Amino acid sequence: MKLKEEIHENYEKYTGRKKIVILFVLLLIIIFSLFSICAGSSNIKPYQILMTIFQNGDGLSNVVIWNIRLPRVLAAIIAGAGLSVAGCVMQSNLRNPLASPSTLGISSAAAFGANIAIIVFGAGSVKSTGSDAVLINNPYIVTICAFSFSMLAAVVILMIAKLRALSSEAVLLAGVAIGSLFSAGITLIQYFAQDVQVAAVVFWTFGDLGRASWKEVIIMAILIIASMIYFVIRQWDYNAMDSGEEAAKSLGVSVERVRFGGMFVSSLITAAAVSFLGIIGFIGLIGPQIMRRIIGGDHRFLIPASALMGSLLLLVSDTFARTIISPIILPVGAITSFMGAPMFLYLLMRGYKRK
Image 1 (cartoon, rainbow, N blue to C red):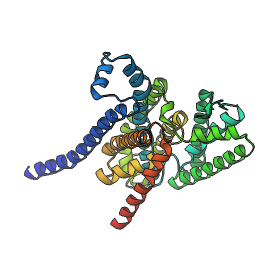
Image 2 (cartoon, helix red, strand yellow):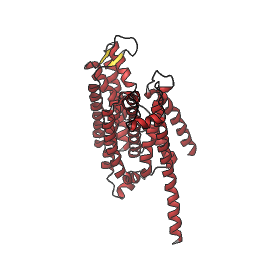
Image 3 (cartoon, rainbow, N blue to C red):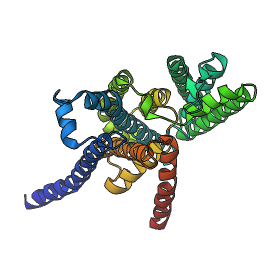
Image 4 (cartoon, helix red, strand yellow):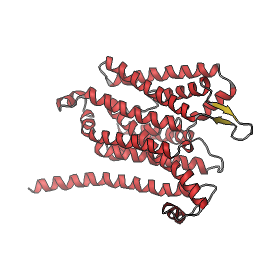
């Protein structure tokens, strides 16, 4: 009986530390959200945020908070969570720490779709003014094309992999091949495009959370919440698969079905986020890696922790992009890459040292 109580106490300590880490990251998200809403050319105090939320703010605060900053902050939280949890599930399903939406070619497919919309369908134009001259004059067709080609790439990858018994190596190699194919297509399309069209494509690929209105935020939130529920339901299957395919099958897990479902839902999240906001790299790669090293590989905690870390990384990156040389707003995709690449190399070196 005493041994049983000791085991239970140790287990409570084991899970308690993980819960504390998750709550700490959640607290950081709340703090940075408030800071991000306050930061900018229109100086807003924290009490004004509360007044505006409870419908007691002035006209300027209502416009700035409800129409500009709050949708942007929520887009960062939601898209960051979606990209990070998609990377977490991809890495777990393929048992490869380098698996992510970008390495599997889904982001390249979205960029190809945007190229088609802007260059072929004429969704990019130029203003007469010198500042902010490049304009996406039909964002809806760009979003539809980017989303369609992202999902097409995901379906093709899964179909190719299914012919090869859906092994993790087949999925990863199929993703690399599809990504290279779409990258070649982008080069060819841009070669025959006009200067303004190429500039509009480059502008889209930068990644911009300011594009998100309440409509996009709600759509992404619905998709990501539904996907998180699916991943939580499958968390024990993912834990079993970490021990190897044979061990998972011996426990009654349908490895092929679980892997197909996880990859499809992850691709759906990525396609939605990228098609609305543009290319945002490294969040799906670095977020899960950070939390895996802090709290371990138990997916009961790793899935929500990865989502929160992705939200924090993208929120901090976007706040930095907006404030570092304000009023000029830097591309958030470039900031995530600048932050993510050194961090990933550091984690990689630490991992090798442990071995």
